[in-house]
Length: 455
Image (cartoon, rainbow, N blue to C red; front, top):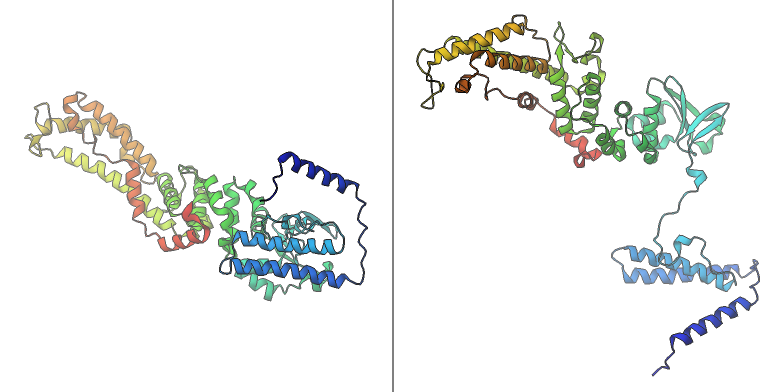
């Protein structure tokens, strides 16, 4: 049996060893000599041995533990070299010490930095320090140093322009003064900057900008033009969640939100936005859609993005159908009350009127109240070009006034043609929106590419 060593003795031994190490002479500084090749061979041999052990232990799957073994092998090889050469046994990379997770080598901070760069008296915003192309964007002529290969990978349009039209020369083959500069005026420079940040791997810098729906609208205009909207996958879902409004009402906000939801493939949000658009849409004298408070110059057809969606004709049709349906309901009520029979009306074998009166007397009373209410609302000059929302409110005012003028007693509540039978505006507009032939397959494809099915 081995001798028992108490905890106190172990501590004393450890303290003695530490004292000996502190009093030992310092190791001579390593100087290169002819045996360097031998040390390198010993280091490689250590690494090969440990990697062989790792492969034999887990040959089928390279797990996280095996990654640690590889890291340990590298560390042990460096330690072997240090021991043979009488150097301190410190690995060149602390992240490769035993137990540390293996990770790809990181680029130096200077290589990853972005920001303004002085070039010939002009300020160039750096997206890639090793870029080979300068893009000039917008009326303010902001300049961005980018990588043409990154642009080509992100967009087939850029691939064609970089390789054929622009004939970009790789930077390593040309001095900075000969770097290609291309003017892409006409775009929102800030929106273009967001796109460049995303495709150059700096999407994290975009998060602080994700509160602005107008910026996202313009960003999608850029990506749609260059056929690269799928590149927005890292930011699209989060951005949409931050700016989406279920009850959006402003004509300009509706146009912006419909473009965004359509292009990002979010069908549910697009349908809700179309509902809001239908409810607030007026019709011009020449039969065009316009927002409730929009000036004549701000017709919905003036928005190029809405024309691209192909939904304007459907929205106009839904709006017209909705207004006609509501007006037709009122006209049918007037007709029915005017042609009431002189005997009690039967409904499921029971008299409608609970006051034991003839139905004609009740209907005549309701008709009188209805006509007075319609006159008060100037129904004769009803504006068929008004929005469905305004039309519905007018009808509800007529119904309320007509009911109060006819028979206020509770015995005649069942005689009220508007009581409990008039559908809600929300249900009516939802039914109209479902009649639209939505491109559900196209929406699904865009949503999958951008991760919208999880949003």
